[in-house]
Image 1 (cartoon, one colour):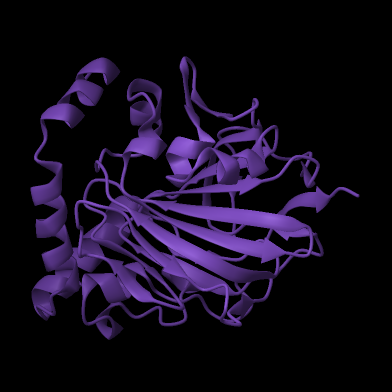
Image 2 (tube, rainbow, N blue to C red):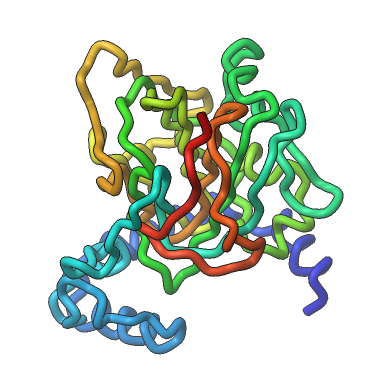
Length: 282
């Protein structure tokens, strides 16, 4: 199917209904049917179960248990770097924010304010900063970890569309990551603010954080906000901060002059959680 047709089909699909259906199946404990679905998924996407803390498919009571599986100890050592990669996946895009514009794909950009669903003053903290957009494919490990130590300040659940977030859709849907449902997590770090945005997608049943649990569903019409500034929720570098129940994308934002990306990084390249992401400046 030509790429433009696949993108056009995204607009017509009943994405909310498909997502609810997928979420219900993924959370169900269906015995042999669940095990068969997991085996088919492992074979279809080439999932490396030798890295899992429990490599036995029979040990997973639901598809969600399998999809959010923990890794065995030592499977993702942390590089001796100021910032480490928070996920397994592929580098969709990374680099400098042009004033307040984040590059999505050829011909498409979106604003920090739209992505973060915040006011202009808050978004201005990232003017001329740095960003990284990391895509998690179905075969990847789907827990999200801290690139550096940070103290949680607030979280916002932003309702939105549920377009697929694969590379073809990123090329074809304007403002994709600022249109889709997302969970925006703000941290204070030793080098200033850091934002991790968990972006939803078609059939992403839900997103969860370690301090809140499952954030969505519910999916109300208006954003929901939680203030954690008065709580001492501190996460070490490499600590788990959240997970996707089915796959999606993470967008990270840093202020101007915060880091220099690993010179080995390249758009489209594969990355693994814990490898060097970048070096702090200053």
